[in-house]
Length: 61
Length: 139
Image (tube, rainbow over all chains, first blue to last red; front, side):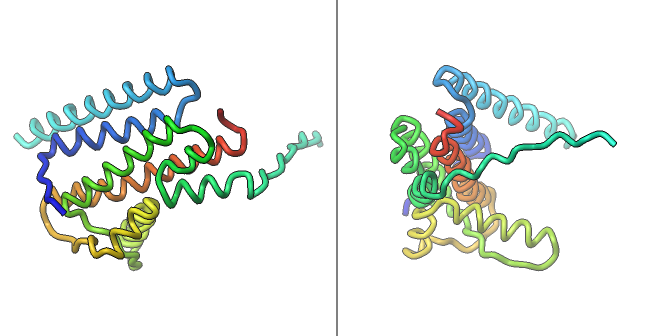
């Protein structure tokens, strides 16, 4: 089994991508709503990721 | 004394209408949706769960073994084990074939462990979706 080394950002990006796909697929009732919800969830993941990253950076001093 | 409004209980859907789709969806992620003739959604679920599980293995993530003790230990280890187990055949095969890794320190391994559990949790969402489709609560 090949070994994979990802940075924090890469791992969080991949996690957000696939989680958003499944959340979009299982949550809404029409394909249009699923796509919109998936994209919105992904953007929320990204905002939380960058926001918490800055919060920790600034909090660390 | 005012009369309490009567709540009508809806009968539980018959087991044979949803159990095959849910069981198949657990064993092979996305297969429940294929059985219910939703191949597009099934393929997206299968790809997402499979890729997350494989990435978790390649990052040398650890598989949880159920342990009990104080509340936090029980929640983490039993919850993690259920999350791992929810990936179905992916989990069973990786344990049987010896891909289960010991828990080691390091952020990549830690992410791998989370990826393995998250793959199972996403499959639980897919199983609930398959249940709702099979019982007619959802298209």
